[in-house]
Image 1 (cartoon, rainbow, N blue to C red):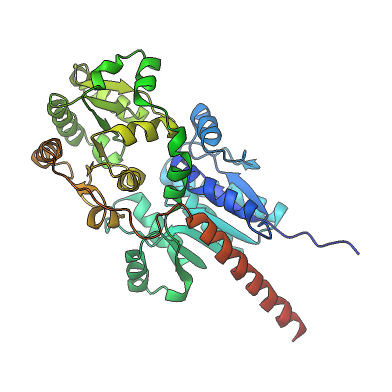
Image 2 (image 1 turned 180 degrees about the vertical axis):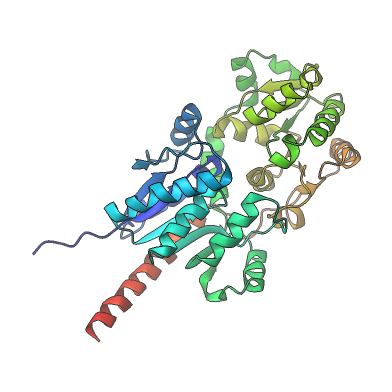
Length: 387
């Protein structure tokens, strides 16, 4: 009598933040007893091959079993193309469940396919809300949560958001933050900022008295010429107070050049770098006096590192980084940005604390809960067949 083959939990990655969330989950699933069989699917939404390879290596994430190679497109086309290419994967391999992380287009697309095929959807980092439906990520979050069978949350406020949207509280499970699992696992491997600047041909002495890290990539900030000009001019003022290490996103670089702002970055206070790998960014953030960003994940990472963060957005879907962490929302307000920097440099700013269950063990809690949930669900299905 042959032993039956257990269908895998299909795990989805599509864009850079997904990798940081999925790496500890894959490790926890492999280490769990019994191990949880997985199939890792890369949708190809993040299409920089060199950066993909670097992230997989840095995070010790197994090579994807399948790459859908979707690439860049409009939100509608990209979402549709992921759906079209993902459905045959379920046909070919079966699926015990489909696990998605975060809020990118691949998250929603694969969740939709699974839900329509009556395959359980597991959403890691559920319930986060900015309240801004103009953000494509916010739409992805809301819709993914509505069709998910288990919603793993990073902070308790997420449960209030889900309850307001009519989601059964029994489906939501507080586990902590897998992004912090990755940070804690890699902190000792982080690349020192001085080594990074030498490699880039820049003088490391320029940051010897302290520096800030800048990231800027949100369409609302970099696609609007007036907003982009305001932010770059404001950063130019800040660069006269302390050096800014600016890891420049390709989209941001293109728009800076298109709108005649490149000269503002050609100043002594700017150290402009290309997009950096995870270990390089971790080293920069850990050593910085402050971080200026519009990234969601960096708000969490700076809170875990105890580094003051000024977020150049109108709102955040990660409120715990403001209420308990080191994050301050300054939007695109030049005065608020400069005053925030001055306060931090004068010894103020938020010290913050590490939030509940941001302890490096979130993935293990997910593995333990999911294994038990799947076993119970499958036992009930068998019992139903024999009833």
